[in-house]
Image (cartoon, rainbow, N blue to C red; front, side, top):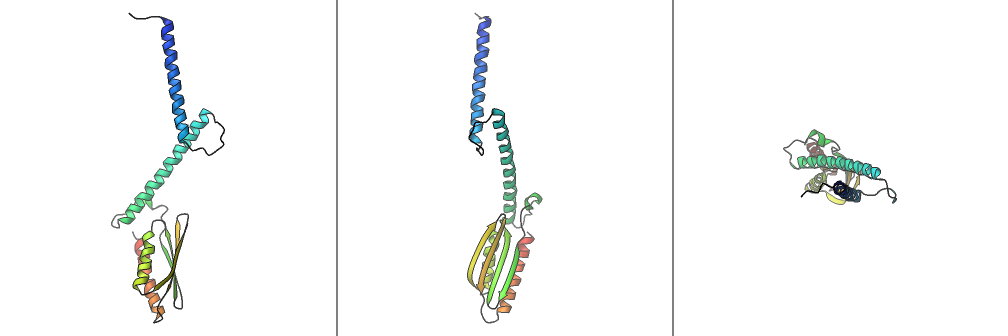
Length: 180
């Protein structure tokens, strides 16, 4: 037997609508809990919460794209036979080397992007191979630029020729990195 009572179907619609609203309220609450609260602790209206969530999601998408480009660039640098994708080269700084010689003291200033950690190690290796004694090595990071400073002492037996060889090898190393 079917119940054709109009009040019964009206009650069913009310119950279904109440359940739908409760489900939407739970979903909004979950969404709101996932968005970091940057502003005041006052409760905001539902449309403001949705706008805040939408802008937060857009910001996350932009950050994700930047990270993917950076990952692709770093993976391309690890594999020297592959070419770096054009979009991934944005933000990559070609290395710069400045070598100062004062008597037997040799100061190497290496300016790179965040992607060239190995270049510092290679510079240290070149200095050791050429017989220079590393006195001090330091670095600092500013935004996406890394400043490495290496203070070394070259032997007294012809420091200018040793400094010239070191300078030539380091410049070649930087040039090789620029062509990757």
